[in-house]
Image (cartoon, rainbow, N blue to C red; front, side, top):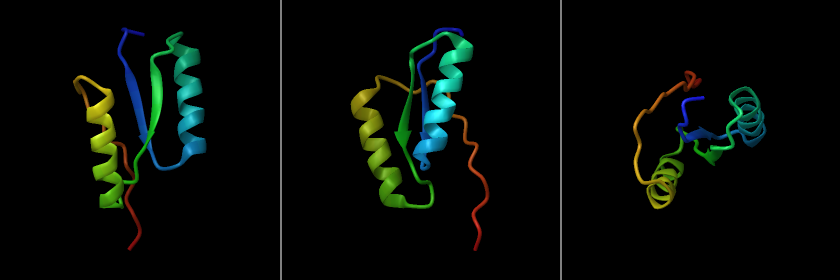
Length: 71
C-alpha cells in the first residue's frame, strides 16, 4: 500500500501465486511478484540471488518467514 515492490520468494509455486494474488487484491498494487527459492537447497539460493540481483536495483527489507525443516 506504500508503493513498495514486493517479491515473494517461495519454493511452492501454488502458494506463492495465491499470496501474490491476495496481496495485489488487498493493496491494489500490481508491483508484487514471485521468485522461486528453496532455502533447503544452496543451488536454489545461489540461483535466486543471481536472478534477484539481475532484476532488482536494491533490497531494502528482507523478511524471512521460513518454517523449520524436518531432519
